[in-house]
Amino acid sequence: PDILRIKVYEPLLLLGKERWGRVDIRLRVKGGGFTAQIYAMRQAIAKGIVAYYQKYVDEATKKEIKDILMAYDRALIVADPRRCEPKKFGGRSARSRFQKSYR
Image (cartoon, rainbow, N blue to C red):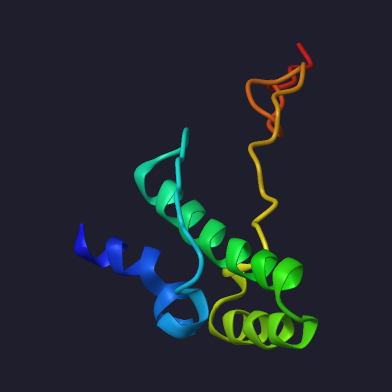
């Protein structure tokens, strides 16, 4: 879909061609759903550009780029740590328990 395609381009559109023009970008995603893969791609692009500037350019420019991305959307740099909680014994899911009967 076109709306999600724009989501992938967000970090590139925010920074402008002059900031990422020297960087080759290749992405391969696996697992998850369609939308989750798109959000993973956009985060990978943003983190990759920041890592490039940290390694090959100066620290001040890296901080400037990181601040631009963080001001727009924190999810571009910081991953969401929420995962599915594992099932435990004594119930049918992670938190719920089997009903207790007294008779």
